Length: 456
Image (cartoon, rainbow, N blue to C red; front, side, top):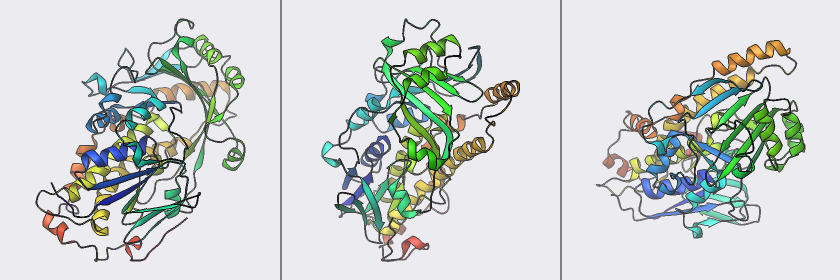
């Protein structure tokens, strides 16, 4: 394994699931022994907050590859007894109309699993040194030159390093530094989410499904599931016709909602949904935002994005957590491919770092663009709010029976995808070639000029 003389200092903006997974992956997969990874989180404390999160088989397999075995247990996550990951029922009749199935998931631990987001975050946190996480650090802007990167915070402080990874979510400041005109789009729905003790509903709702269940109506949806550690979640998703500008003035992410509104919204649905909504003790609001695909994830020779910052898909198909985990693994594989040579002491030059980021970009960006194309197609073909009830019913049944097949995403093998990219002519360069790269060579593209700064 290569032993670099210099230390590689990696700055990660965000210590959520994507940021923690990236720190773990780089530490355990990249093969670089002389790493200094520092995470900067805007929250003042690391608490078990948030709602539910689902990980598909690809995400669960990646957790195992990263050595986060404590997140694979039945105690921390919930897997339905039927082994069917997604069950879709009619809003009024409660009849099952459609299901998804696992195709090639022989290990039950890798089946679709649902967590309280705080519990998954805590499981990842056990694998990251606390002294590497800096709290209360809200990013104001980011900069990069050929020689270094920097993060600047609203408290007036700054930090500097060799690589910058934006894991700062759907409204990423790192992304905005390089794409100042990037704008999110309101996806049309607001999610009313709650997590609470399962005893509040178990034994109190007749015919409560044992498996996680989605109920679809002509306009609105409802989801309910048991989670790990004896928790339960309900999620009501309703259409909101306001513009993005109007919405941002009235609703903020994770804002407390009106639980009476939730109960009123679903009072005429089937008895199971009606009972679940009535027993839900509170709700918090999460507007659904979607962004366009980015033209590149290599923002400069030393800067990239990961998770929702890289692919703002609005949480479609409950894919966000698994995508972020696969991102982290692919990024670490990119660094391993470039630097972890048993024969050469490869320098941490800008061009070598860029090569690592390019491997990551080529492995992941096209994959997530396929998801974004589905999401944007659905947004552009939404059922009008004023549609007649009888027409809406026909459209609903058609939507339920003709949902996109997402096996390509939920059982994706990121290591296989990376190997194909790394074996391509562009990246199949031997270690001696990489070792001759001394960082003085200017690589094509506007982000490689010495002295270039891009800031918010």
